[in-house]
Picture 1 (cartoon, one colour):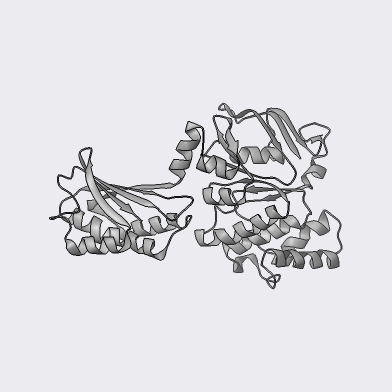
Picture 2 (spheres, rainbow, N blue to C red):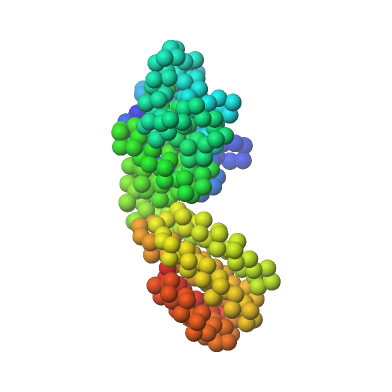
Length: 358
């Protein structure tokens, strides 16, 4: 359905994409991942010609959309675009947002457009909300309306530009479910995301962009479980890790716990693990800092495939074992062990390290 040949895009500081080649079959769900600035959204915007590359060809259904004679409007009518920030018209109701383009662009009469809009709202779980204004909707609901609006144009292909990145983690699942249903129905899609679990769940193929092109690609289980390239392995490892530095003179346990829980919501987790995060602050960090530690380095490494997550706390400059007196007592350890699978400590370079299996 899509064939890209030797695509190069340069914003004036050197190519962000260079001689990129890609084929997408009808019915595929291709997910694009990669670090910031690697060209994910640039590639998406080239596909619907929101930006024009310096060179190359983009063939969609047999037409080169970069050809000067190409009917770009006609080609774009085959493509839907779902944006990060919904882009709903704030002064129009949900129903009016959905029927506007079919009536103005496709020439549908209002009766048919309204009937179809109600079917689409049912499809995305928003039946009964057609008279609501966007300001009355949650982020997840706005994104589902945006998807319904895109479907109202009968696209053959949908481009998703980070559709969950502006959402609270608790709302990601509802949007992911709608997109997964579209994929399972055979809709061709290209999706840019930084959510690795989301990419694994909705993609039939995953592309990892790096070094100005497609560095590695494959089925989700291949790329996520057995990445071959060093850059892919490093990116996936880093994407699953939360890191922060904590200082005794400005320790904010509530802020730390909130950030950790927010990060953990992307993954399979439990209430017990959330309680462990609070316990780590109260029963480990606070006592160790109170006994003289100056700072700590915290890392939380999450698993994509299970709820077995690992927290590592490193205490540079600490002379003794942080799990022993004068730092912790039996009550501190008992509370930590009540929530953790196991807790152990060992000497690290110029300090000590505590490992907690969540």
